[in-house]
Image (cartoon, rainbow, N blue to C red):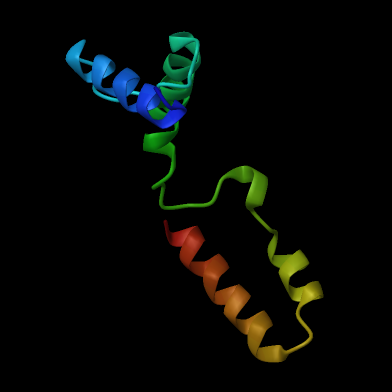
Length: 85
C-alpha cells in the first residue's frame, strides 16, 4: 500500500470515529486541541472596533511623521473622532 493510500485510509478511519477534522499525520491530538483553544480565544478579539493599545499612535507622533499638511489634518480628525467615542 502506498503512502498516499495509507493517508487516505487513516483519514477515513478518523471520520469513521466521528472526528470533525482529521489530520492523519498529526501524532498527538493534544496539539490540535491546543491550537483550537488558542483559535477560539482569538476569535472575539479580531473584530474589535478600535486598535489595541500596542498599536495606538499619539497625535503628536502622527504629526511629526507627517510631512504633508493634509495628513496631519487627517490625524487630527481621527483624534477628534476617537475622543467622541
